[in-house]
Length: 216
Image (cartoon, rainbow, N blue to C red):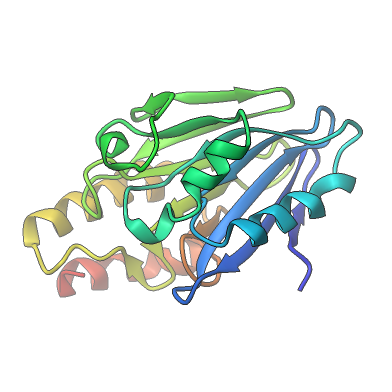
């Protein structure tokens, strides 16, 4: 399967699924500069290498992995992180409240609203508390189309992420997702989750009341 899922004005977005848990690994490449952001080095270092090779034709310049960002601390999203960190000079980025749990030192610790600037595009961090304390969604605002949200395990088709049947954690995550995602972005916004298929905010918005009522 071709890893290219979106060719936008300024960037390409590639995705592969790795591991028995169907973890998504995303790669964003600037068409002008070749600078790259990889989101969630979840597993299978060799497959991630293949993803990077796939991107060689995506830019006018030679692609260079600049940042590896992690959506949250859970083991299934970081199994290839150390190998990738050891083999590149990319900066390691994660949410402030999850950073100490990662298997490598974190260069940049993110809070809500922080911006990552690349040559050719920017990414905004949205802190979504509940699945883990420091979960971060990474948002790309396309100048000529819908925004793209890389939501980790905080938002999926059909509901928010797992909060272990803890009402306090669920309320925290639901409120953050509603206020910081659904109230802040329009229906055409594309959601790229940490596992499985993408969705849009418009497809999920009618069900927010159901999610709140069921508590998961």
